Image 1 (cartoon, rainbow, N blue to C red):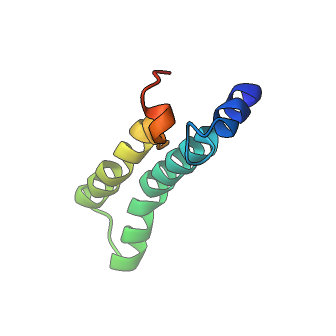
Image 2: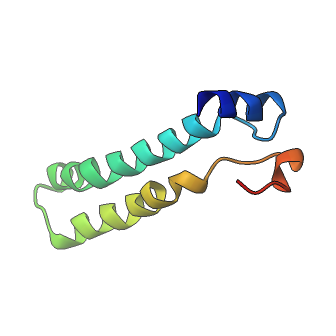
Length: 81
């Protein structure tokens, strides 16, 4: 996979390394899901179902769609991966 990503970057199909962009979004989604409810509970001194639901609904799209987030350039936009 590394050789493929390097080749894609050299040809300028992506603005940044697709693997790095995916990892950032997936980790950000996980952090929001895992710690969002906890931090809200600590700051408000009580944990409700709504805080857990809010953090899950905020982080879940990042976690699920992080795989397709890398932005393609014009040269890479016409290619399907």
